[in-house]
Image (cartoon, rainbow, N blue to C red; front, side):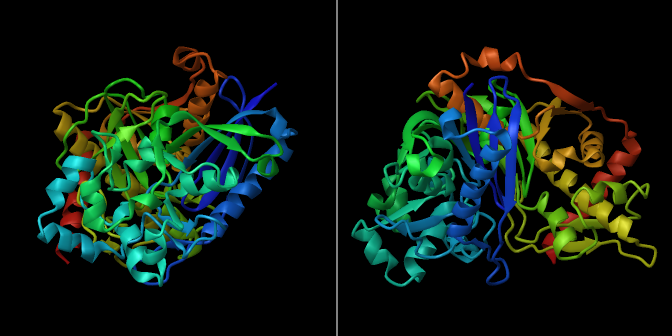
Length: 492
């Protein structure tokens, strides 16, 4: 029996998940890797840590499943988006650390571009707000600040890629240099209407065209992993940015269907079909598909989602395991007036304010650790609430249900609180690894492992539905308090 291998390369860990023909998990392996913080607001990864951890979990997953590369029908890759890597075209050696999507080092440059009047041009071509979140300014920073890199790039000696491109290049021993529509659409260099690298934007940012990968649909026959990497010559047939992958994995393929992923950040996406929708505070992006016809989505990105739980564990040492956060939160009936604004790297959608930093409001002598932990979890739900309300304003209609996934969706307290303040049903699938599942579906559909989307939909199962139970007065008071704290944090 053949299987699909999904590689899920995330911000804080790499995963390998092996799926069977029903979309169920046969085996998985996960490995965290170091986060690098050279200065305040800067975030980096060592590309060798990314690659090494990803290859390590592949081997572990094979052992857990009792299979080899010969048993894999296809590979799907999904990845943290916007993170920027530049490497030598011959040796594969990176020229510097990867600049992570969370990194704010180019915020001042973005502000200069805004003052110079480029914000509307960038939005019209890319659907993105002008922000350091996206890859273009990160790539420009590497070209301008790492010795000799610009000259080598102009000679064609260097490759640029998001994480998918870097992994695929190494898996294929350099024979594949490509990315997909979804990842390209996050670089701020790709025109989402013409589906091509945009010459005006390349000139604006000073990016040599020859260092950019080819761009293909998410479901596409990209080539083969080298036999020395997986033990067999396995086709790579699905490549997709993590959030669009989760949207596809949740089978939100119809107009209006939406999901939120609770990972390092939080990412709320709605499928808008074959037409891009303009927004006042969200981004318009490309969604995943299995052909060259573009699909679009509205997206709101929260920079600090589950990462605040990791912060409670690793930096504050308030909990031993991420799962402990739910137990502590349930020991108290509220936060005792405490609100946490987790703007560790600025605020994302719908505010896009890079200057705000993490702030705590409402501390008193009566504040306990349990109040603080509960406030941290609630801050995740409040941020998703803000994005959801911005999406409702763009669409002119209320949200009626929300599919959820990612590690944070396993937290029952958080999911119930999310349903309460959104006043809508929150649906959690049986398989919450929907980011990996989306890459599995795309790869499987491309090679014919799955017969059709309808066949896949028949296997979808909802594990639990969270129904709103909070009274209107309490909800309005809590949301009003959050909004007031956001205003005060931004004024400071």
